[in-house]
Length: 191
Picture 1 (tube, helix red, strand yellow):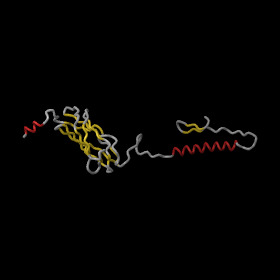
Picture 2 (cartoon, helix red, strand yellow):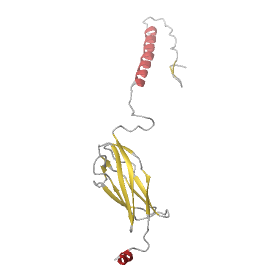
Picture 3 (cartoon, helix red, strand yellow):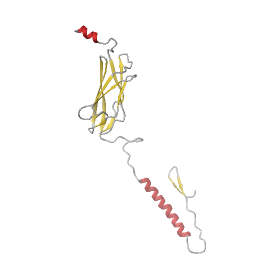
Picture 4 (cartoon, one colour):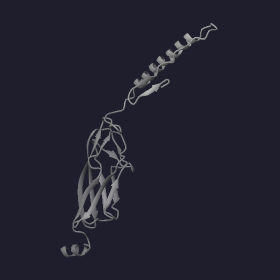
């Protein structure tokens, strides 16, 4: 029986394949979100050369922090491309925070390799682009402009009150002084 089994093995089968996560390891997602970044693995032979057309299986946990692939299943099988890479993305994560261990297995002919990739689900909002924490709009800037407008408007109204008398003699009104705000300066009125 040993000889029959040995004869059934392809002569050009790789003896060893290797599997390495090259993109997406340790990515943190918000619970209930879709994965916007992929998880990519590299399949190579024992010499480090890419292994194309290897069947790569990605398996999400059945319970706890987990999710579903776009097919609605917890397992997705992808063939590696000519560079030996296989990717999945767009997973719909569940609402349980914590560590997700994605089990990844590659099979080519009689050779197999396996690895576990870690992803994380978190309840807290992710930092917004351009800074730390969550953006909270304020209206302090608008208040400043309303106060400045009231001061300027008040000065103009005062000028009209003094300059708009009913006498036939013209009244001289001094021009309003220019107001500068901050650095770089913003000048309101005549310079």
